[in-house]
Each structure stands twice: as C-alpha cells, then as structure tokens.
Image (tube, rainbow, N blue to C red):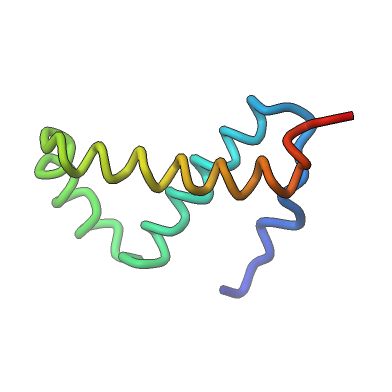
Length: 76
C-alpha cells in the first residue's frame, strides 16, 4: 500500500458516498487478489452466480453504511 488514494471518507452527497462505497469494495477485491489475470479469469464465474452477486452487493452496502456514518448521514 504505497500510494494514498483515500484521504477521507467525507463526501458532499449520498451519491458520491455510494460511489465511494463501490470504490472501496472494488479496491478490497484488488488488494485481496492483486493478479489482474486471475481476476479477469474468474470474472465469468461470479458474474453469472446470483449468490456471488448478492454477496458483492452486501459488501457495497456495508461500505456505504460506513461512509454514511462518517458523513453523519449528510445531515446539516
């Protein structure tokens, strides 16, 4: 983890927060499996697996929950 790509969880809007949650989820996969060849080889397997897609959605939702809490749920 040489580069700092996440200076803050604070976003201006819930939409930006959701997009950050997706980025966090994708980065997590990339850190777990850093070999792009393996990632691309496995993609067809999970892309058509409803359980894998549901699990991915749950990870995004958990990350969105974290970002929303960090942003005080965008309350002013």
